[in-house]
Image 1 (tube, rainbow, N blue to C red):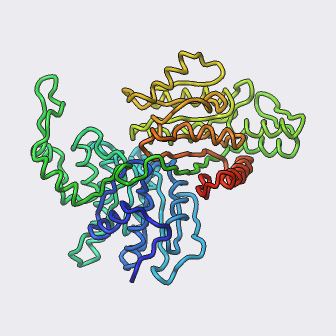
Image 2 (image 1 turned 120 degrees about the vertical axis):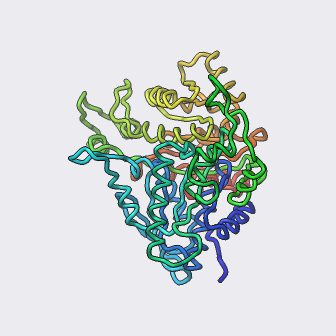
Length: 485
């Protein structure tokens, strides 16, 4: 049987797929935007083709569930069923005869391991029980560096979940092969503070590699200080042995090695309006008037109505009154993942209240944050631009109004751009997206659109795609940046 991927892989992905299939428990430690998700899905598909895997659990940050839905649709070659804790769907017609139908369960990390108390005061994890009942053959752990603290709640819960599933599988099989579920770790920043963060991740993946006791592992490999520095790691012992384990059980790749520096990738993250805001949106569509607790929004004509609809989607009125925080919360959830990866970020939004709210959210996460809009002084603007040019003590974030940071600037210190909604026109989109590109950009760039499905956002996106086609034809440029977004 010959495997035919749905989308053509890069060389670094093909090498990782072959090694991952052979090792079964494996780690993909690629820099961000180098295609970890596609690589993991190709590994899954080959196992499915060989009859080894029928059910796959994907544990990811809750904000990434939509991303995984899109990745499945784009890259998985065989027919599949997918579900979350709230939704179910099936793939469009694909090759069913080759591998049969694969079942995917996409579980948000936060909700899977969230604890609640029953009537007797005992802790319960009802959604974790659902995951265990799913009984996966393969587990993909996205952003596995979240489990880098051996004593952390996520690291402990995830390790014990995998061990329980394997014990259950061992009780009903006599195979001496590697027990399922197998585990794929995906991370762009697997060991930002040395070797110790890898222990907890490898314990989840394959406890036979480094054991299960962090104390025993420390005793073999870690030299701590004394006195006030007794918790400070001075150096590691047996580093060559650690490196050998890492090489045999993982694939690592940088943007330069992959040849993807200055390449562009796009994704769309969705959020849902709360019921009150959804009613306001529909009222404005039908009646040009929408009521809410603190007053009434009105529109005199179609142009003003469009602005009001965008304000309802964004969550703020013209004078800054908040209608909802769903969109800001979605950006914050995504930005929190980037902060943990050490990534700087530029967030573009349309209205001043959105800029202010997103500035506060980014600052609260921990970014060194700058606000750039019409009221920003020249000195503050210079400070914001300088923060992206030099490595800061913490990742830098700029919350900018589209019109205020779209021309005559270079933002190549960031490789992550988030659009809160969709830019008003092709010129704004083209100018803002190119600020992070150019000959000085040494990494792949990701443009993320945070939108509400089934709204004016979709109309704006279609308009951008049409104008992008015109631009490509004019410039005789075959690359379509907005394709499939």
